[in-house]
Length: 209
Image (cartoon, rainbow, N blue to C red; front, side, top):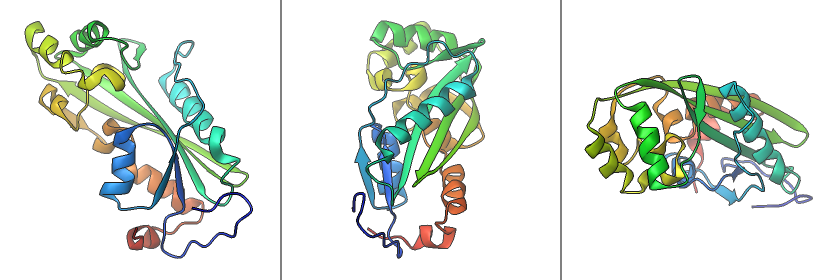
């Protein structure tokens, strides 16, 4: 990957920086799509306190993440993303303990909630921000079963305290909308944003590492 000041050469290789620590987002881009991606830790605290409107929270944080590293990679597409769960009029972020994860799962149990992911893409001086919403319905489960899942600690680094791509798949009865949004990165939405910024869809498919 070239940094600021080096010539850009798109060809069919992805010119992507992902400003995220999420292994799920990394896997979606690098393993599922096969894109060449540089992973950079954003210098942004994921604090959703103070936000009442879920799309405001994820759009703000995703933009902050992308912009926190974009100045070093102005010839590349820099992607930031942030995911939260929304239910009962309030936002669920990442739990800080097994006990907090269990409380979140109890609230989600047998009910439908919304997963919001904000996406920001920076290319040079251009910033694009969007978001995706997916409805997820949990099956009805006993507190004992929910505690057993919380104790796996799979959900400790995930909004809403569960991972739909892992053991948490057994929690979910129905997904309405983009599945990859629930994982943490709505790929079709991201692809369209990259296309609008100059990376054609056909070249996204041709990209090889």
